[in-house]
Image (cartoon, rainbow, N blue to C red; front, top):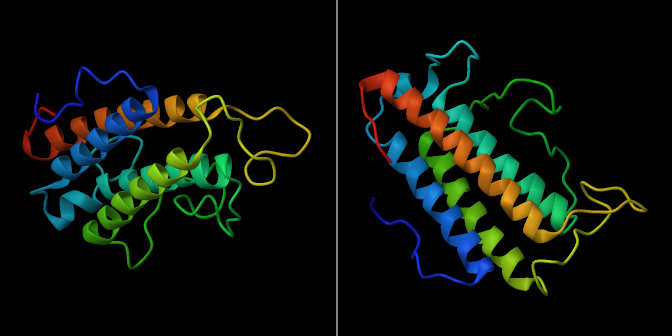
Length: 171
């Protein structure tokens, strides 16, 4: 498999980041070559399109690392789904493959900054953003595992959508 993270990585922080980078690159490969119609059309009963899934990944990572871990304020943390957690994913008029992939890469850079500035992976998320004051918040290690499983699951779903669109398979 091309460009998997180094199997000799022992530092958990770098291992998390390397796998997240890998999945972001995989998302880009999965979108490459799809027509505009294939990017915006669903072939699945649940109704999401490949671009809607990418937008969800962008916002999911923001919610967990920026709004969650560092408690950055967000006017609309559910910007991938029309403003609430329980609505379907949706695109804005200006969303394009290029703009969303640029945002995905920028989100990865911001995640690297957030993770790099943390004292250690056992550090707990700040209260005041996603997490209320006075309640136990998750550790950075837990958040990174959660974000990683979200990427893995959704990249697998994107793999199926790509296969249905044009027969393309593989990582």
